[in-house]
Length: 516
Image (cartoon, rainbow, N blue to C red; front, side, top):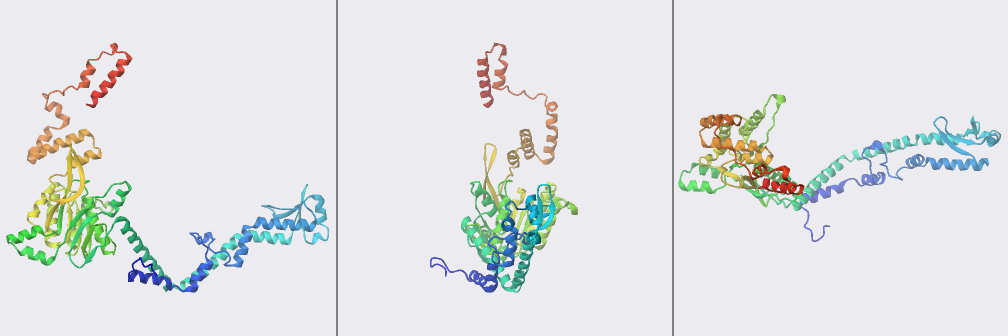
């Protein structure tokens, strides 16, 4: 019985525990008595039958393992029997086991009564060799002992298999119970260690997660001592409420649309800010909730998800003649053709594999189709900031963005999701973090500034005229670069007038100027 301090087991778990006791007792007792404590991985390695389970096997093992002791005992017996203390039992690859005595004693063994027991085999210059029927039999049994021991074990194994097959139903039920208990115990331990909570799962169209976390990323960060930044996500939707809201054109209805949770989020923000992690963590929480596990969140309410659609990452299928963009479009087509109101959809960067206007157009149309036709709960991550204006047109679309801060020209990722839209992608800052050469970063910033200031055609024409390769000829009157303090100091130096000490002091001074 469970200790009073513990809650009683749920009926499902109690039933699994009871099922494990239903295995036939005779089989359990036989397995316990026959199998060794430590079992090999492969039956042909032997050693899995316990000592005492088979007298024949114990004798064979003794012969296999104690051959030297048996030979020594036989040697002592023959020495005492013949009175020849110099008698030895030896072995070689030609004769096998044999008895060896000095020549002066060998003549004794070829005479009766010893000649009836000791069979002469070989005469050497300094020894005579004999054998006996007993020694030959023992030698044969020693040679066969290892193979014979394994043969006996495998025969006993076959008997145990037959006995187990006779209890197939009971064993299958026990295996099922063990599997259920193993999964349940593992998930329970994980829930305690990682602060997972029990989700509310029902037949609604809710999807409200407070303080959600990505279980794998959180575990990886924990190993480095870092904390995962949790985020909320509310895609809750009710088809009846949506229809009523859609039909309402009054000002009050518009206010209701603004305040109510939106089933489609358009997520913008820079790379490396955590958009993909946010998409994946919400999909994983939905899967864990519906499989019966606690989830990595402070609170979660998941309306039943009939299908989960995911279009993330970039991959090609060249063997089938599909480029990266083609694979992306095939996956997007599957979502737009199959997703329904009860589905959960996560899409990451639709349209990025083609020309800018083509990609933007495809992404724009996909968002509208998800909203108007599929009506799925969905997270749509994109770098096309132009899509954010759709929030003014689509009643169930909300803009969300990854929060960042700029500090001295660099970008700091906060990994927080909040309402609103990003006005830029900070791609050049991310490229800088990745280690692109400084001239490349500087040129990229110059090009970006030019493109942002003028219209598309004028900006491109200006960039062509301003290519770095031709900058020297395009701008001959450009002012010379200002001389640095270190360069000025170097010009004033006369190396021939410097003592070693002065040269060293000057070197430190120049080093200090270079740092400024």
